[in-house]
Amino acid sequence: MVLADSDEQVRVKIPANGNREFDQTPVILNSAPEGPGARADLTVRVKGQETTINVPIENGTSDQYQPYIPFASP
Image (cartoon, rainbow, N blue to C red; front, side):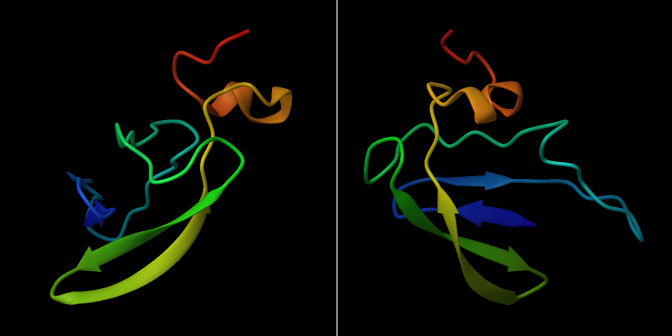
């Protein structure tokens, strides 16, 4: 599977017949089109098919998301 925004893509391995818990092993994109609190479109590609999902942009400043953000600021 590939997750991509407008200028970056990250390959994500998912075991056959398995799943990936993103809150346990996060995927980090280093750039974002907007600041924290905004939302951004990501393209998800799997075996030649793709779809777009809209996800929140977080940097760890919101307490509720700190457990899910690597290197979250206190």
